[in-house]
Image 1 (tube, rainbow, N blue to C red):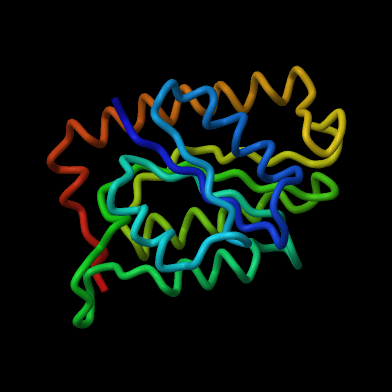
Image 2: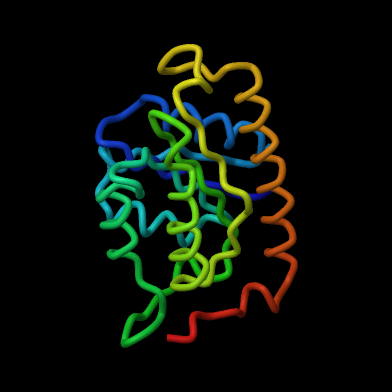
Length: 177
């Protein structure tokens, strides 16, 4: 069975982003864990990457991009270059979940996808999941349509994870620089 972790980079625990990531994780059928960056030291999160088959990265959109806490996590994550000894994300599958106040910031998914795919050699499920406030009944409940969409992304991530795990070539792709 696959192990998939969800990392939520919101400023406080709970809330819309955690709800959306949990909905995606529930759809995977895998052994899952939800980690809130506001509650976990970066070292613990980067260590969890090594044991995961896939990672769901969740963040509210702040100033048209993912949060500073997610940026800090990625900065703290080695990628096996320039004297670094580990590359815990390389050859993994990932999914993206971003949330925002309106639909205007859905393109923020592209920046995060580029960083993960290009800089870390992660196989990122596309398209990412972006939900605005209309996707929620309340802070902790997705609408039925959003819940099904999140679960569909979870099922797709499970399939991508299986494909990446079974492909030596996909796992061997490394960042050029």
